[in-house]
Amino acid sequence: MNYELKNIPERTLKPRQTGFTMVMDKGLSPREVEDFLAVGSEYVDVVKLGWATSYVTPNLKDKLNIYKQAGIPTYFGGTLFEAFIIRGQFEDYRRVLDKFDMSYAEVSDGSLEMNHEEKCQYIRTLSKQVTVLSEVGSKDDQKIIPPYKWITLMQAELDAGAWKVIGEAREGGNVGLFRSTGEVRSGLVEEILTKIPFEKIIWEAPQKAQQVWFIKLLGSNVNLGNIAPNEVIPLETIRLGLRGDTFSDFLSMNGK
Image (cartoon, rainbow, N blue to C red; front, side):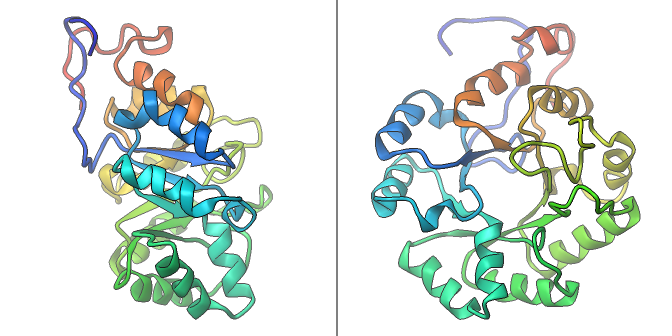
């Protein structure tokens, strides 16, 4: 850090299992990636190329190589996985992962209907090839999944080989874990945490109020995802109690 302050929460160091920040890249250019990483690389653990943006992104290999040189793994959004699955192209998807030297993959079923055992089988297969992140929750804001089912699905996907499970929120933070207003479904989150270890979950939380809510509940080292590149530094200050939203939360304690 640039200077010393007392009573700052202790943050985990990379490679992290907790305090994980997943950034969503929705189409940055190689030059924008360089600029972003010049200030944010220390605080970024993995970057998701949102939904299927990788299909239409020019100079994709060049961009991925910039992330790789910075020591930051990348993966393609779960919607791309689903786009291959619905077209019967799973083996083609696996070849794409190899072609672009991807070490992570996201398995999701937020846009299509998929038997859950089939989803778990995809996780088992891909986990032999890459590190799997599996996403639980629907992108349909009319589809409400009860807490017990979230728990069942998350545990089954972890058992199938997922490294971490992701709580769905989309890039807008208005489905899945959240109501259409962006308000956290707090009862759902707290019930999930009675059964699934917090370090195994990445909570998609693109809105500042959502990030603050999770940090107040679980501490500085909660795993958060779908963070915009220009929100990485602001998020780190929230984690450290250096923004008004959490200013008084960590003055008399060490971070989790």
